[in-house]
Length: 232
Figure 1 (cartoon, rainbow, N blue to C red):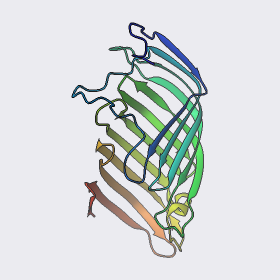
Figure 2: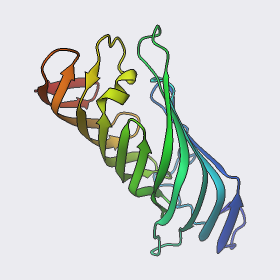
Figure 3: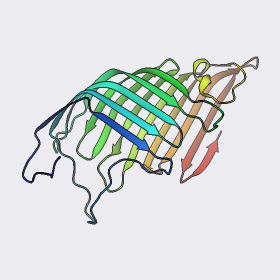
Figure 4: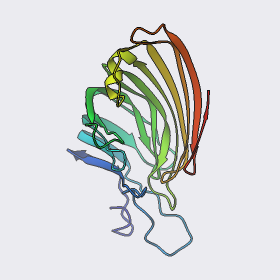
């Protein structure tokens, strides 16, 4: 570990079977490392030189929402040296996800597919570029970053979700009629990880609910500091 041996600089680190787990607990806190120092200076960057990861597992869980995602195995090479950080390419990698429900009477739904993209780490910030998730219900693309080593962890990301509503409708609780059509959702997340601002824009040009004629839906919503504003 950098800093454990004064004067020792890590040039290359090779890991096989590493498991990265990111958890957002029910109280909004995360398992991301926090500064253990009373100093006002920011935490020192985690410099690990060139990193070669083999058979890595990435797991993300949101305890309050009941969401869970796991991707493995991932082979990835990163360069965390100061001023030289460049993203490494990985995938397509098998992935499985479970989507929870706010209604305890509604069981969670699962899906599986592939994940691919580019990932970088400069010692403090984890970045993703052209991250793409493909599942039978649609696809998700993400670009953004997350502060991993920081006094206050922040996040900024933009995502686009394109879905086949006939297949994705099983994730909608209480649905009793057939749903057809397609929809696109653009999501922007920014701010402190424990309480980010989330902006969502949804466009569905022709949705059919059972025998009802197709309709067009367009809406925008913002969730900031626990307050939700919806525009249609």
